[in-house]
Image (cartoon, rainbow, N blue to C red):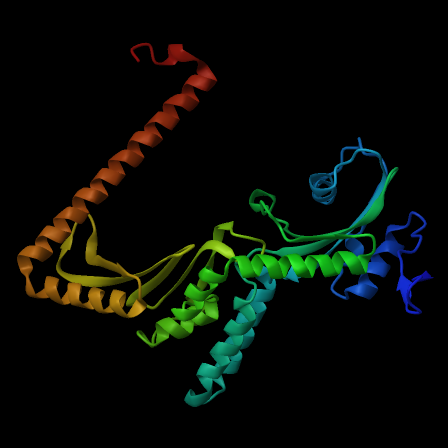
Length: 351
């Protein structure tokens, strides 16, 4: 598997013969990248075959970036790039946290909370990124392809980071160069995220918000899945949220637009039959400081101005009733449509 370069005494590592064994291929990739899941390897020989659900994902990774013309065979396997924590594992971590925090002094409890969030926030409620390793052989060429993808097929990247090469080493170097290039392209956006101290993870969100409300529940901190990525690693838009019994904090990022939203509940002296005994008060601003300050100021204003408070309650009541009526209308239409689809138009002769 060693081939000497003509201009150097340094041997060049080349791709071995996998002997049509995905196990050998997986082992080879694992030796290069220990994160490779060795049971994820697959081999494809027939370009016209119809794969099952999981192998379709492997297959599409090849056909999307290489094409299947003149294909003889190819191998595919994956390695976690960001490993999403399963729900069972998250529950286990939370249970351990609850046992641990109960035995600690007040001065150490915050450290315990941050340790848990450090573990959860890396991956929980975020995309499951994987690096797909592909070795292909066509009639006219062969080579390697490494692509950063997500197993969520509904949110596949439009322009994922990828690397190509005649050897695995070359493909990996090309992958790193392309990742660096995409990072550099987003320099202005990255500076916005850095200069304004904008939280990127659930742990960051908890730390920022607990400065304004010490009762924020660390386990309420959530990263809301982005709708789009500017590239494979930097979200074009995303949201974070966390809350206490008194305050809900929301952060919405849409590329260069940043908006903090703060919502508090104002307790009403006279309970409304429509909205209950509390009035939600929400404000927004570019910074969390201003959004929080404005929310408190708005609540104080309503408390000191009964007429404005009555108007705010009345506005919310009208909005709530309008939403309820629209919901009932849609439910009614859905019921009628389902009855017609089952029994025909004659079931409502006067319609």
